[in-house]
Image (cartoon, rainbow, N blue to C red; front, side, top):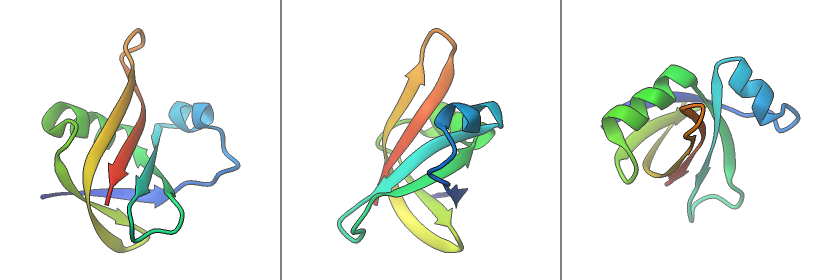
Length: 91
């Protein structure tokens, strides 16, 4: 499985600003989490995931040093701008 490094997303920063700064917002959900983790992924890593893996692929994501096995649940894309808007992971 591929390892993707992510960071916890600050909820005060708007998604549009994140995208301008080279990040893609995302989330990790699963039965072991009481609340959904909001994360941000480097744009180049998100594009690589979309090109090489696609939805329903297994990946390892690193969040604050913790390794999480997850499946790419959904990749939301703006088809006019050819830009990834959001990635959802299911742990």
